[in-house]
Image 1: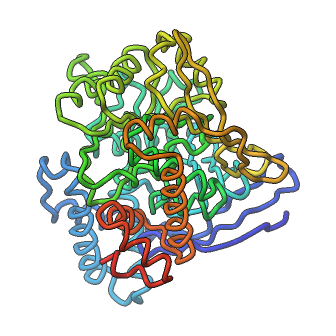
Image 2: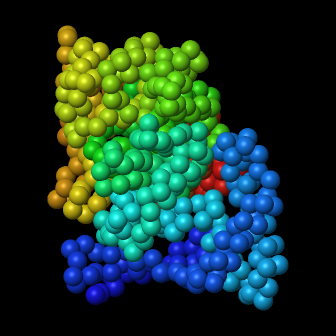
Length: 497
């Protein structure tokens, strides 16, 4: 046995050590969670305290069903737990008291030991397959790891799934055994019940970064360079329709999230998702909407198509769709492009050519002539060997009489790990000239300005979604002021106030 790495995570004031172990007798590495174990006597005391807390805190049904009240309920529980621990278990140190209260919070309003995993920023995925095997995690550095956490019963897994669903108004039952949901922290959750998942009840949690991805963070980790970032910024500014594609876990949603910060603050943006994943600057004129599954009687469903059609009646300037999957959704989305709305969406495809093929083949099966409304495709890629994510291709869609072709402008070269130019952009430049009146020379000058702003912001270590959004907002309002600040290498603090 060999320890590859160890570090500490803290959840609800309870510290835990994480050790990544290379096991001699196993094919996979292990993720060991080491924290203060509760003794039998303390466990009895905890159960007693839980009952006392439930008796003493009056929680209305309306509060339970309102996600906005979750933090308020949690704080009331923490306050009451501290008072009861001091009263019933006198003589504890402050550290011991915090551990007891933390464990109470994890068990009563959380997911038990899984809460430690949710606090580990190194994890991307948490998977419960059944009560008969350990929880698995996907580590950013070490890939899939087997943990030393086991959920004791199938009922407990079902209970965790029900808790997650209840907080956002969703149900998982024997009649409705599949659930897509999200935690209040934004992490995406999928759950299935036995016998649909034949091993047992399952929960899959896809974690998202605590701080939303911005274009600056993507530049910092070499996912994209400033040249492409400036081109995408220009495309978003002048309302070009952009599709982000890639395989599973390639970073499609993160990339989409990052470019939406380029939206002018004086335009209305409506996003439509199955589960809420996007996190945009708080000052944007943004209305996020999510679908809803039918209740056990089959009523109350709100589909993505319902939301797309409805969004067209809400006077949007821009429409964002989580993922294009079905024909009717794609038809309405492309119709929105044809009627003058700027549209952004994601689709599963590994190259720009595959995007075209995916859109004109079942189950989407759009007439190829409709694809001419789409202007730019950005392909994201995750290298499975190293786990790095890169922008793989940037292409423009070139319309022909009754078809389209893909002109790849940039492509990632794996050996050099650089994104290199392939062809000159033609359609993008023509559309920009047509709709803005700018010459090719002016467009290139604009791209140069945007590049210098992005590189300067990066050099200052500013990568928070609200701060990046504010600088973009000021660029639209007073470009001379922003460019002067960059040129003279002055502080950006005034722009961030």
